[in-house]
Image: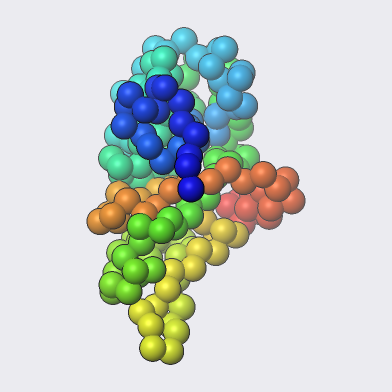
Length: 175
């Protein structure tokens, strides 16, 4: 199956077609964020886990290969612009998903992602005659990225949550 990728993705070696940019937690809508962010990098400097990096155009984005989000709120607190929602709202609009690179899906015992997931959103379902298969409970996934970095085959990706009812359920669970 052919995937459509942009020229920028091609030049950067991103052949997956994956384009989801994850902004810092509690960020406003993308168009408002990129219009209002001054790219001062103060949020990058205070990120206690170092996952905030200068992305395309110098705008801050999350890089889960560097670690996980601790939801410390320092990025939202240091920012002088109006690019963060109240920290009483849901921090993200994404959840983890497992792609076809997953070792367990290929018959190799690996449960690293589940071991790293504090919210226990990743569990492994036993199947007769097979390796236990990963299952993500998206209602419990807070999108922190703890599962991403330790994965030996980069099988964890993130997907936007599109359903407003689902987001409201996550907000209740997060509070």
